Amino acid sequence: MGLKEGRNPRVSEIEEIVGEIERRLIQRYCELRNVGIEPSIQLLLAIVTQEGKPLLYVFDSRGIAEPVHDNPGYALLGSGTITGGLLLLRLLDYHPGEAWEWDLGLLSAFIIDMVSEVDPSVSPFLGESFYIRYDEKEGKVVLGPLKIEVYKEYKDRVRKRRELLRYIWNLAEKLGEKSEETIIEKLNMLEKEAK
Image 1 (tube, rainbow, N blue to C red):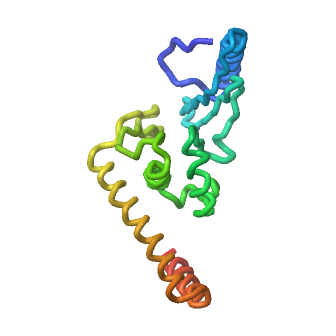
Image 2: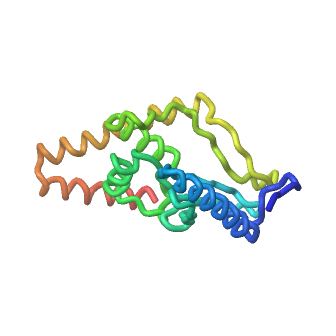
Image 3: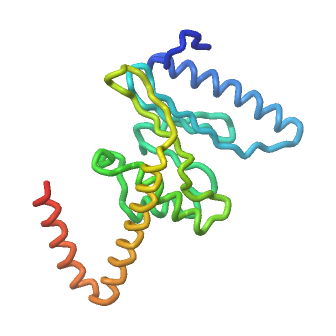
């Protein structure tokens, strides 16, 4: 299926498109296996539909697509997933349902930077990221690179979050867990008051 109208596909069209991609990938991967090459590939398809709905699919080494836009609501690819990405998400107890409260750009930059320090195959967050969103005023999907000011802001915020985590850990070491529980209770009260 090809969209020649110069528009993003509708939600109803995505299933057919994803099915066609699967069919082609399965066929090509089968051809590679027939000549002794075992593909080890993960592909990511990110779409913002004409209706403004973001969809995310991960294609595995068999060519099969897994929709991840609703559950878990994000995708991690490559060796960085194993060397730290999932660990950091677990440490932070991240749940996609809470995503509206979190700056996912900051979370992504933080994870990329931290994992890149322990996995040489992961490049640090250097700002080559693209921001994709649905512009309701214009009624279309907008794509563009992060501006240098935004990149610098993210790098500074990642540094501060790292320092904050280190500070909390050091505080727990010095005060012990009982004192830490009191501090956490006070922080929770401050958070509730801020809302």
